[in-house]
Image 1 (tube, helix red, strand yellow):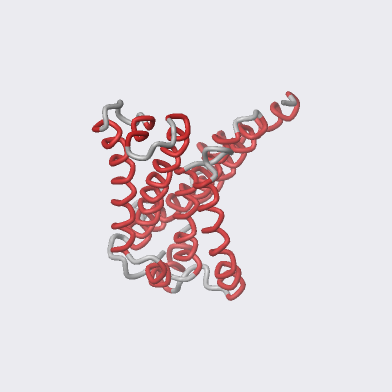
Image 2 (cartoon, one colour):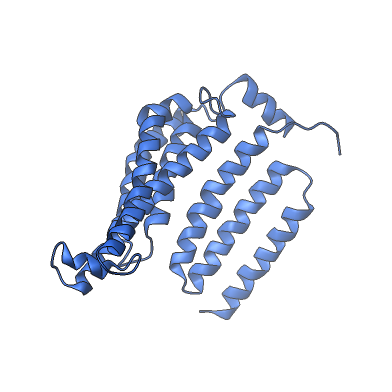
Length: 81
Length: 159
C-alpha cells in the first residue's frame, strides 16, 4: 500500500463521480461511469483485495457498461431537457 | 447521442473488419480464461461468479462485434437456458445432497459418505463443484440479459 497512489486514485474517483452526476448526456455519463469503475478496480487491487478488483473489472467496467449502453440506445427522448 | 441512435437504426454498429477479425481471434482465449478462472478459483483470485461473467462476456462481445445471430449460433437460446438451469441445479443439488446425507446445508464434509476421500479433501472438492454450478448459471444469465436487452426482447437483431 502506497498512500500517495491511494490518494491520487481516490481523487480521480471523486472527479469521475462528480462528472458522472453533472453530465446531461446519458451516453457520456455511462462512459465516465465505466472509467469510475475501472479506477475503483485499480484502487481495490492496490489495496490488496484482488478478488473484489476482479469482480469490479468484469462486472462493473465490463458487463454493466455494455448493458447501460444497450438500455440507453433503446430509449427515446420525448422532451429536450 | 441522437446521432448514435439514428446510426443504430440504419446500420449495424461496430461493423469493421479489424474489430471482427480481432474478436474472432480473441473469443476462444477469453472463454479459455473464463474456464481457468472457474477451475482455479479456490487457489487464487477468481471463482464461479467472475469466471461466469467472463464466459458470458465472450458471447456479448460476439453479439457486439457481429450481430445477434452470430452470437446465437455459438450458443443457442435453448442451450443457454439448459446450461443456466443445470448450473442452479448443481449448486442446490450439492447442498441438498449434503443435507440429506446428515450434514448441514452446504456442509461438504457430509459427501464423505458417498466417496471416502476424507472430510478436508471433500470441503475443497465441494467448493469446486459449487463454483462450476455458479459459473454456468452466471454465464447464462449474463448472456441472456444482453440478448434480451440489446434486441428489445425479439432476439432477431442486435443493437
